[in-house]
Amino acid sequence: MSTKVPRDLPDAEHQALKIAVVPTNRSVHQWGRDAMSEKIWREHASASWHAPNAEADETDVPAKADENPP
Image: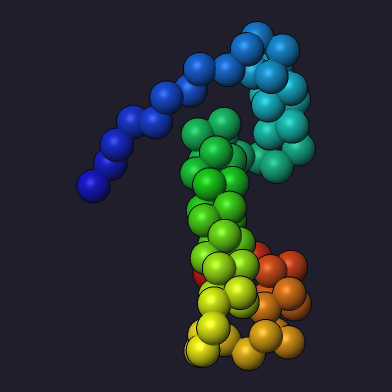
């Protein structure tokens, strides 16, 4: 399923985004998707780390947060 996400950015932030994306050789759209995916993955890893009886080993979560998302 595909859903459009609001992209209301002030002009200065939009310009900064376009400049940041150039060295990655990705489109703004792909960069945004990758950034959201990484943020979701990090939030999930952080929640798992703090949850009692979580399946993740607490010593592995901070190291995994530094890795690229799956």
